[in-house]
Length: 161
Image: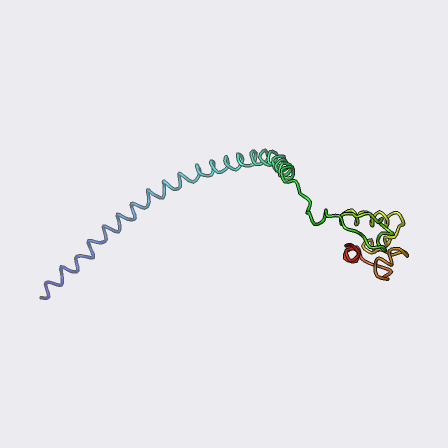
């Protein structure tokens, strides 16, 4: 039985030539890779130069294209006024002293109040959001001497019927 184990020792000797073949196979492959690398560098260098020039041209062409659709979109969607804002409302007697007694839409009332404010220079010089009321506007604003423009519209709506 001791003789049967000796042939098993011969099997590793057979593996050595296989390993030698693998090493030999790797050497030619390495030469091929080395030959391809310089060619790849040349191609990359050409692509980089080719990509830079068209990129500048494309950017110049895209800028006018972006502006044109924005104008077309604005022209297509015309805003329709809300019917509630366009409904004529009757101002109270206090507000009528500023805008007149005729029924007006809310938008026109606000415009007339702003015209009155600008005509009499009632907008605060330091903080343009505030309105310094005179005697007529003080009655409309509920006795407040200074009112912000956002609060003003709220106070005016209380005088419309």
